[in-house]
Figure 1: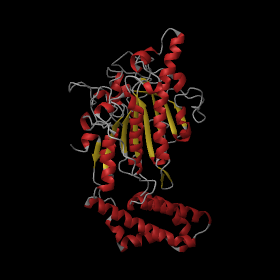
Figure 2 (figure 1 turned 135 degrees about the horizontal axis):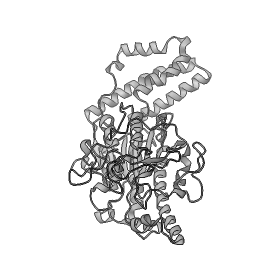
Figure 3 (figure 1 turned 135 degrees about the vertical axis):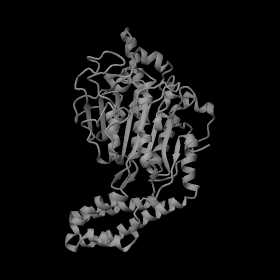
Figure 4 (figure 1 turned 180 degrees about the vertical axis):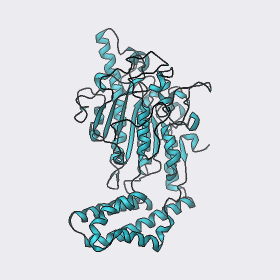
Length: 484
């Protein structure tokens, strides 16, 4: 069975650095860039963006997390405005994300417009369109998208720089198999990319190979060339330290520290950056399907994904959080779908309060898992920041209103520094009070006030320097205004 069959897509790292870096010509070019002694201050400002960032800067990662059962406005909606937003109020479902407030971009008012304008809505369309921006098609006999998902689009163009092109994880299969309902990643033409839910298999295929498998000749060449460039940069930059003072010396010290962090990665001495995680215990298929083990398996998979990202073994990850049909670890023994989501507007006000409180505890638990990932990424130093600074983490959902299974007002949150590509620490009210369904004639017709989630997919692709202006559905063009 191949890596791809287990939610892993391996690629061998190519030779990514120019051969001239070893020769006298490149040294003369570098010294020319440095200039004379009188231009040293200018050189320190040029060093990072012109050389290091072009070749060995911290890579940008993309992680997409998906959860269920929409939003409850009184618990999800932040209070106050764009920059003074508050998610730390009592019973807030997003309060676990408070420690990362400055790196959040909360998007309020997005719709899976492509679904209801093409005649579908509800559960099945959510996972299909989440990362594809595509309508649901039944031409193959099952619901599939017409196009590939964003993680696979990016991995196909950028994933060859790492050992594994992408990683697809699923914390629990609602129906036992690789079903459309819980698939998030799709290749070209909308072909489902299999996911893995066994933490032990994920560990063995990623970290056992990392620590025991011999690297390929191509990987050795690529690592040697990166190491050669780093040696060159560190050696020449170190010579400047005694010739600089004050702020310019501090800048150069910071650049050297970043270079040495990268050097540790290349030589396998990354310390806390790339450490071998503890091996998860083996589980039977029955244990993997045991609802009581969802919290443990979720945390294991999140930790393994975070470590794979920190080790730069992959840069593209999807995680489906799919605990069904209940959440006994939260004291919820009722059906999340039938007894809670479909009854959030229960006429009996006392029962309604209890139902909404229980569903909110489930939503908050999902936020805690996202916070676990963010915290792990933030704890790993990289360059002049940490891995979270160099990541885009997208947390999305299948629905907006859980009762009517609406595809409008779907809760989306972006977290991470995004390598400075997005302006974070903000809450964007995208529709400014407009009803997306005002003037809408029903399924299959245009919704003039709706804002398609496709725009966010375009924004993320452009953050990776991809020259596109639409994604999934050509009708919705351009990035989402206000993100950059």
